Image (cartoon, rainbow, N blue to C red; front, side, top):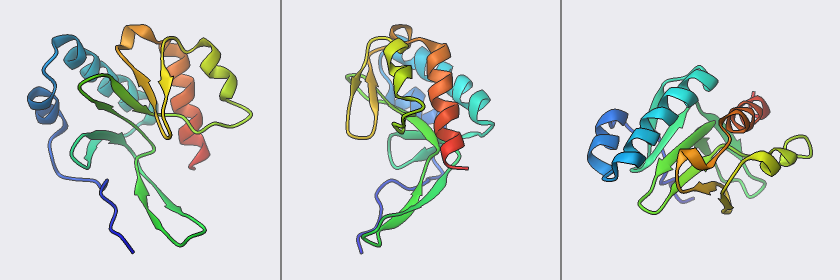
Length: 135
């Protein structure tokens, strides 16, 4: 069985943001996301793999037998845009995307250019719903 690449590390989150994020607006948005996601999750940020900042964790196991741990919620301040790991689509929450703002969807994340492009109240609801699904 292949080893998971995205595991919790000991890298300091603030040091990562200061050294990895070059754009000042993205850096400010990253620190704001740290503040908000810490508050919403009640958990401290930790690095997962080289570029994902996660809050809390849960264990998963697929029918194939593959299993591992992943952050409850998180984000990555990638060069082009933020990857937000905050959404598990369900019938109860998919309507929240209608009022989320400017974004695109990936396989397992939501991409946004900057924090001002999204409705923060909706982001909070998405985060809290996702956390509740894993508890």
